[in-house]
Length: 239
Ligand SMILES: N[C@@H](CCC(=O)N[C@@H](CS)C(=O)NCC(=O)O)C(=O)O
Image (tube, rainbow, N blue to C red; front, top):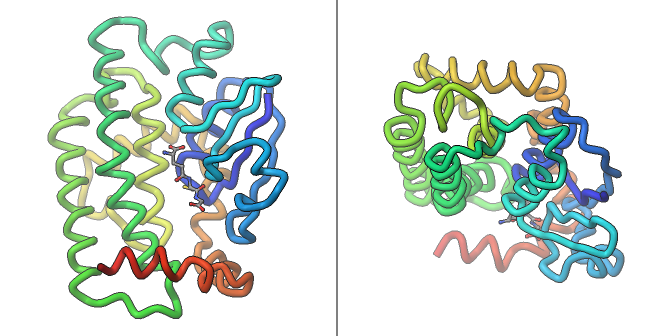
């Protein structure tokens, strides 16, 4: 199995972490987004979507991180402990509920804050846009706690699942810009520590190393001309 990844990307980290944590065999195929490799000819043969992660298992190709995570769980039941995607109807439904919600909530707002705070060094983000992005993220984080985490150890109960994995990688994206969303949040911080422990601190830190050095990524984007290339998309975010 080949996994096409750039670990600056949240959905790539979830796929990478599950595979590494459970020992699923794979070949790491690097797609450097800051160099625009997603638009290259080689990656175009793998994915017409031109986004990472992508997975190639023989001739079978999958895009979309959630589908890839579910595929890996179902393909390797002997390697992936059942708690990652519980067979119990309602627990699995809770995991699915979070996985459906996060795309337009946690991911959308966390990514926007990430882009606004770090990826646009040469573009002045209008104050009202920045304030509104930060407020959206705050409200989403509040909802994450009150609706999904509640008083449980993990999203689907007492054991970690794909939902926690996807949640933590998304939340780490704005954290990589120096915005400590865990500050003054003991319950949320305790959840983060539990998730890190299950994944393994060393592996977790290794996967997040590049995002914690995001100043350097912004510079690479700029040096590679990618910010110029992305200007139309960037402008759209301001309208
Ligand atoms: N819904 C997709 C999102 C994939 C996605 O947006 N990937 C981003 C990185 S986080 C990407 O490849 N962006 C490159 C581009 O848009 O040019 C998933 O969960 O896999």
